[in-house]
Image 1 (cartoon, rainbow, N blue to C red):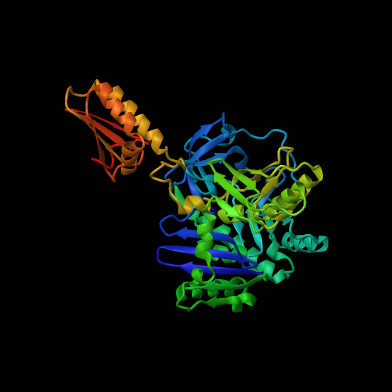
Image 2: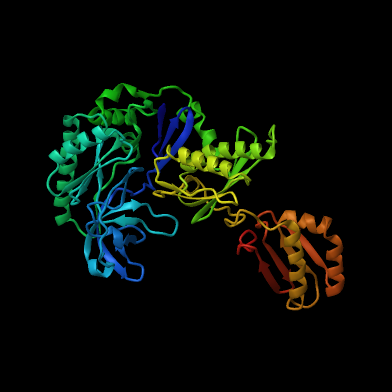
Length: 517
């Protein structure tokens, strides 16, 4: 069963989605950093790039949005080959277009265009937008201009699929298209008709706004985090929704009353003095989700390292030594790791290319077992994924849909000590480099007198305790006294060399003089 916990403050909203008492997803929206996925903008085409078959569109955000040629104009066959219905992928049969139009045939600079944000800006990249507008409702996703009705692949009963499709086709206007969402299963015609009416009226209102809107301008904002989460996660399998603020509780109740009145009794107001997320140990679980190492129940562990474009996951035996033989030990850890890896990818919202380095398995049958277990585990993930079989080296290549910033990027910033490298140079490395710099620059500094070196206290201790002989030998070689001064405000890799009227600064990440100015 699912439980949704909603914690709101004036600064931010945090939502924990729990499944079977485990934290499955953690969503956060800060008032000053609200995402823009789902927003519809009237934009202006900037550069058109035939070599990339893409264009940049000014939609009023800090960075221009990226629009690919495949996201312009009517998709062949009615819809794109796959449509993501809030993570619930809908596979569609489409007719291949024998002569797809090139981007320069569809768009020109300064052209006005209606687009919808498909992906928030990530890092240095602007938002990804599409001209294929979609408006999600409770039971349907409205796709204006597509003239097609599709059914979520998670509705498996053929009779139910046919019934729902016939109802929607009967209600839809001639030029309108719809995706029938998983939540629509079992609904009567009256419920579906209400959703169709709501979505078509919303689209008519958007079109009217378009004529009088400036360029660029936000035409239609998507729902904020709380109603969006209720819309996408709250269903008959949800045990309860717990809200810790009365004002937000009333807003949730009103939303549920309008779209799913039968579930209204499952929304509760949390009034205990203990913070809501502390009550369910969410804070501890979030801190754990920011660590690279995750221990498995067996004693093995996985290690997750993320780069901008690729995430590497390493599976290790750790403390587990098994009971029978090596192959059985390895298989047990790999199978357990498949579930935890998928859980962590979903919780951390890791997207893009993912490489999983399982422990090597000698038997092909065991590699197949791990692959099948991984494929079964990703079925619980709403994000679109693709998994390739385990290679002979024990590697699995997979991709996961990326729509918003991952948890680490939302909650963490690059370390100021290591400048985001994850590691800093060791004390011996810095100390010996410093001795070489003193020798190199002693000839350039003012003649006579002593040389003063400002360093971090850790480096000062190393020079006096472990590199003292080298320091004395250097003084004899350059015929000058070297005085070491500790400065706790300096970066651990930074130092400054002074002699007479001359001075020289060094630092591993360009911050040598920051702390001693």
